[in-house]
Length: 172
Image (cartoon, rainbow, N blue to C red; front, top):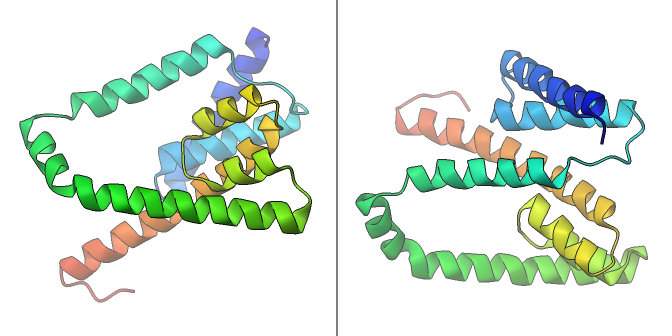
């Protein structure tokens, strides 16, 4: 990937995040950047991906951000929700596999793409897994990006709704 393309993607992501904030998108840094970088990617014809070193740096930053939030209180709370959390994760994975098998049998997509596209997981991790199995990683990335946008949007809306409801607000 050329430096110009990389800078273009990062600029598109930054502009998208800024516009996402103005448009009051839920979780605007993520959704706006996703839309902005995606728009640039489509405008230049697609077919490029970020260099592995940059993906690594981004994953380290996300991991560091999450790790910095852990403390004794978080670990105690984690212990309390571990069993129900495992049940929820297993149910979600089983549902994702079922939806993937249904998609595979009804749509003509490959089995690997269908199942990995429907199970929960990080976009990067699922795309890497599919690529290592020789599947169409671009298709799986597209499926997961749509999932990510829907989940982030719905969860942002629900969080605001519950917050208003909890504070006695009457707006939907």
